[in-house]
Amino acid sequence: MPQTPPTTLAVSDAITHYRQLRELTRDELSYVLTMAGHPLSSDTIGQMENRQRVVTVDDLIALACALDTTPAVLLTHIPIDMPAPEGPFATGVPADLDRAELLAWVEGKTALDYESRVRWSEDRVGRLRVLSTHLEDQLQGGYAEIRELGELAEQEAETRPVQMLRMRIRDGEYALNQAEIALAIAAQRLDRLLGLPGDAC
Image (cartoon, rainbow, N blue to C red; front, side):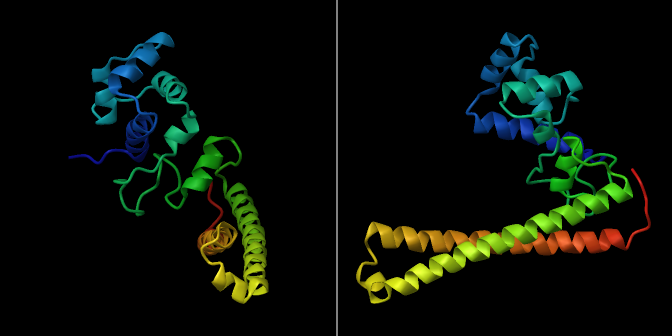
């Protein structure tokens, strides 16, 4: 049985995901599309969601509008059952493209030639470094506030201001951890890209 192309997989899963997120039944989505001048039956929507019917470009635009999202988001959606990273996230693009770079390309913010990919990756690493530094500074500020409270932080641990401060610190630690992971992955991707010959899409 032939494997479903990744963009077909992404779009079909995205239709289901955003329809359920908007709390729409297939019948309701069908009604919205009919009112917008692009009628699709609930059965047709089901066939699209189950990868039994190809989603045309016209369908994609109408569905994105009806689901209150964008064609770029539908095209770059990553389903839970997306095949493991040995293949690309979209049909016909370089296999090492991650979702962020794919989305930037679909939105026209970068090209896929070698030089553009290097520039985009360098910019992403730079932005993630700035974000990590900013989050680290915020986290240090939270730690300093807790230290200033000293014993009072323990005595008033149940009060709303102390709980909010502890929550801010916990959220900051999580955000910093995620930013550092993203930075490490982006830096690794850039190193790998710099090691490749200058190929183009």
